[in-house]
Length: 241
Image (cartoon, rainbow, N blue to C red; front, side):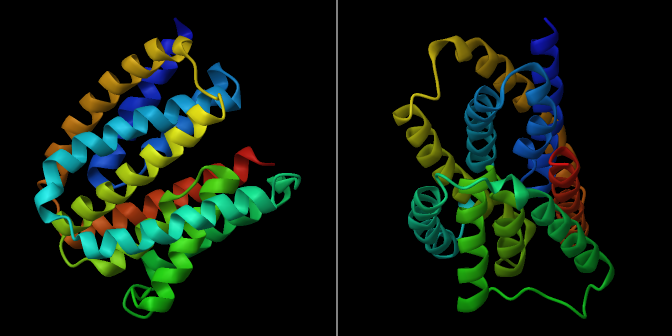
């Protein structure tokens, strides 16, 4: 029973965050899920539940998706993900995790308080760096959200385009990642009840989050997204100590 309650809590908060800021479901679920189960199970269940979040939100915003701005980072993500997994299969990556978390915290603070003086560009170099970072960090730590969200914030001009494009990206890479996990035998039928409960709680969270996103402007949405990047970095830093 405790396990289900933790899944419901993490999925509801994560769904709310994903609906408002375009990402965050995995961040909040992974803050809570490892309390109730081992890391492999937590990551696998979170991956599928997050796929449902992307699906719900993509259905709502797909008309505003800019596919040209989605397919390039997706195309970069796939080979980088495979390459990093191959190169680091015998490497202890835990050493790098707190430094990565600290970097995201500092980046979020800088973006929030130096707005106008500092801006990440969605040119070919910015796209390449952030897409490679997303693929590498996903392979190492299952964290693709913070770097790629910075790309979509820079590449899109309206909150609708941002939400439609970012959810299309997460939808594609989640399908890919789930396929890899199934191939690697990291998922089993015993996870289905947890996934279903999490998906329902997450849907409720996205519903209430949708009420909020309709009332905020682009600037507010960007600030919320930067704050979630900072929360993601802080949680990564703290849990890796």
